[in-house]
View 1 (tube, rainbow, N blue to C red):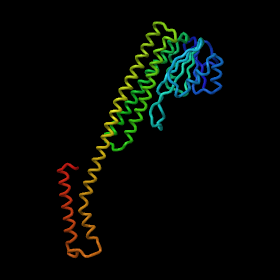
View 2 (view 1 turned 90 degrees about the vertical axis):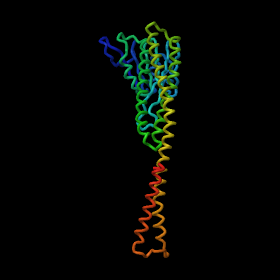
View 3 (view 1 turned 180 degrees about the vertical axis):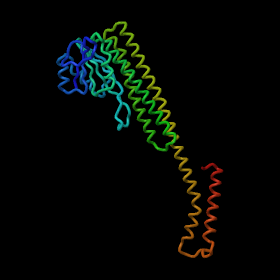
Length: 307
């Protein structure tokens, strides 16, 4: 999908039929025709676009002539049927002398925020790119808050659970945190090279520092959540084993208690003569005796705290 936007004289963001000076080009899930059109029209290397669509592409910044490519990895919420709640995907930002091109393999939520920060004077510059990176950093922090809420919900369930499903839920959340840590580390390295590749004024340097702080905060938060979650999974694995042991202990105690009535019923159910089997109160006496023994056994188990 190819969309071209430019702010009108009235300050409204309008879609354009073709690429013009000062416009912002969105290449979202582009076809091969869209890729070739943008590459030929702007004279940018096709690799700039194809690399931005590669799901495994690392964050980086490079320059080719008057064209610059910046790739940043951002979180992406997965569908509910996926086991891992979040993964990371690259978003490419291509700066030319005429326009800025934003490339992504999916329609990412932060792209909707990008369209709100176009300069009112229609001038697309480094400041615009820095604002995009700041939006990405803050979006990452919101995703971390969402993951933390998922951990809290799973924590409440797992305290009473003897199943492994909630531990696997925590494990999948931890995988998302690993993706975050990996992406944020590379993003910070890439942004450290930002000033050496693109020209910036003092205002841009301030924006870059704010963005770096947000990225670093997201990285530090991800590391803390990752360490806490790893410790929590170890602890809850032990809790599940303890809960399971308690269940087995109770079932074993009940089995022993019920053994005495079962033995009596088994013995007197055999097809050969047994002592006093023909007496009038034989059944009542035997069952009463079995119940008394079972009750005494249960009382002993209770005193020993086996229940």
